[in-house]
Image 1 (spheres, rainbow, N blue to C red):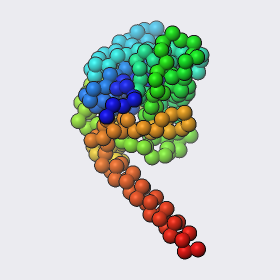
Image 2: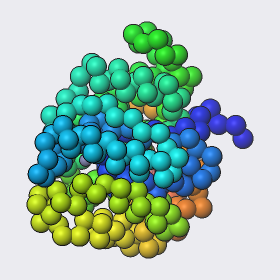
Image 3: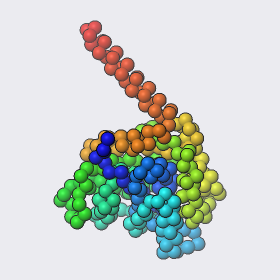
Image 4: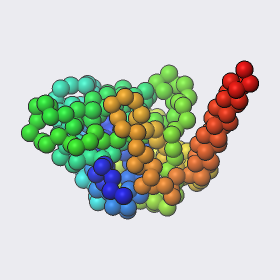
Length: 281
Ligand SMILES: [Zn+2]
């Protein structure tokens, strides 16, 4: 059946390497089933350098992100917001909106509104606002409005916790990325500059090993070896179609599927009980 949502996915995160950490496996799977993929970062990650100036770090990190995107034939666009000082501005909203329209996004993936990092939260706010405007004709841009507002998805923050360290609600679904783990790791390995930074900033000696652990822990939670986790933005103003879930149906982990089925069965039972009680009155 022809979907009203174009097969174009745009992943918009704050820093180079965010997309690779949070959703590169899912993007690769979408690319393999015919999706055109664009990776956008709102900053070039200029603060993520050790023994390097901001300017040099920016040049290096853009190259690294470009190389990573090429591994899945994705485009890479950097919007040059300042790392660590990301604000929700009119310019950034219009720049993001421009990309959403130019790429005719059907699916957008970004951070959660309650992510642990302030740049990630700012990114989410900008992306949400821009996506919401993408089909409206009065926006002051020459790019044609989209026919339908794209579906918005949120990737899982590190540790699945909010800025205060509280555990988040269960992801809406997990994608088994075991079959594309090699590509995901190759994409991550393009971000060589982050090894030194993680060693100094987080005393993390094995950045890639830690990332792998993280992806494995999401796998363990959902009954497979490696997984990425997502929430769909189901608030007002957005369509509720499960387009990403349907495109990757065979990769949704069986546990997650079983769990959601068992939740539905439980709800149906509860409703039946309520009806039965009402009938008895
Ligand atoms: Zn980040």
